[in-house]
Length: 154
Image 1 (cartoon, helix red, strand yellow):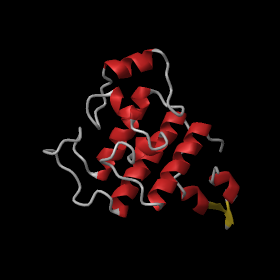
Image 2 (cartoon, one colour):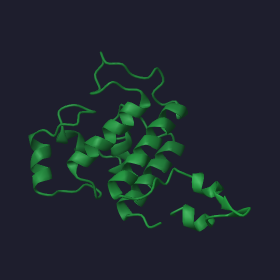
Image 3 (cartoon, helix red, strand yellow):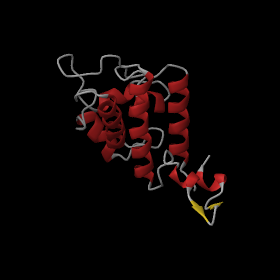
């Protein structure tokens, strides 16, 4: 399976952040989108609230000009972040009064968020979910149906 450059780079950045303990849902530089965008927070100016799906004026202008950030449009970035936050257990948008996980940097919480994000990133690119390894265990006549390099895209 062939993946896009943006998908491959995004997954690698999220993988590194997860394993280096530099993934934090409440920080605009260390959240899913912050990591995809090289630990910058410029994307936060595309909406009025962290976790919101509505583009503000700046976001709409960037979207209308066709601006891409590491391959993703402003609206795609907001959807990626909302997917991550919801899967981590946050009530959106982020606000101190809204529900949130007790331990936001717990590896299980982050893994749940990343699993949903990777699934969503694959949907955006129209490719099979790279997190789905069920093909690894399919067989025909006691032999593997697929070779390992056919299932794992990287």
